[in-house]
Length: 465
Image (cartoon, rainbow, N blue to C red; front, side, top):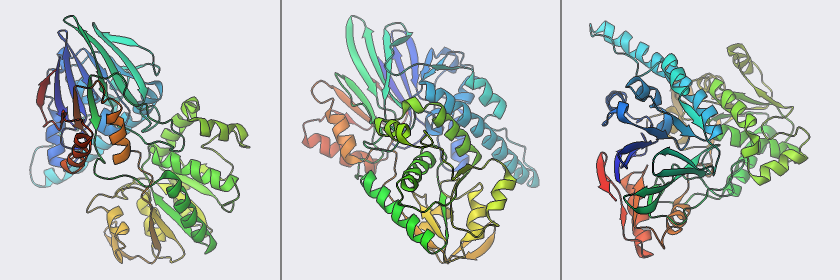
């Protein structure tokens, strides 16, 4: 068996790992590389393998850095199936179409600039139509249901606890008379997170490919993040302000809604209106509600006892779908909570909410995720006094609060324990989906505990096992 690390190798995006076994080839994930526009465009347009000769794709979850290049794979001649859990299939259907729309818009924006320079236009990486075609290849498989995508390879999806439907991929392989197990973690989630089941750790594993995104640091406890959220919301409401939350549409928004629902139900927050104002977040929330059977035990118990019998819906919550509804929120002066995309406040409806509320000292902008350098979200998190929105400068008079415990990725301690769960039998561990600053501390910790065959493969490197 050969493993080719074609993406998310010594970086955190573009997950693509090619497995050659028994004369067949399997692709673990087909994600988009995300970075500077020109570099990303170049990387995502070319595959380092023949897409037409690929036999199957196994998809760990629907995040775009794991699924987002599927339409381009199919444009390049792939005609097989893309296997994933049922929630992932439904979520990928929503996200890939949204991604196609973004690629079309980006190409149109770039082509306007190129036209002014007399340069030829570029084509979008793929379109909404391409994304819709790719979704026809998605094949749902239940958790823990074995299937055989190619001869000699028996596959199971097990809970990864990262987002709804996320899975680690377990491959039990028979090749040339020997049997062994390859375990691909996908993105590893955290324990005791709202809505989601805890991740399943590796067992009886010979070769482990696992993420190392936060191998350099542990995360704050989810209960602490919940309490911090309650305190920020309560003090803003008490002074009659609005809470504006830039939030990722997938996972983070749904977790916030559930937490706020609990706080209001338990009487810890006043009964004020809550709005989810992002078309993608609304559509993804529909997928969450459709697959409520995949929620964890705590959430199941909450829904059974809740007056509304749902985690992501209650009488004070509105999912905003139209532009007119969104604009109307900025005419209101009463206390409310607005959760809107994008998570780094770079595009989308969140910009309008920030523009209209940032200069009122009663209000709070709440940052609940890591913010990339040079984004509006980072400038807000850094408490800059003046920020530019839509080309105009605004005085930041509102409070800015940051909460760091909502990450959907495992921190250092869980990553350590995840790898150690395979220690007795594992022959090699490959760290992916992380940078050197995350990999090196994790490798050192594992080495101290007797796991020395831990590697950090370079992009496009190949390993025979």
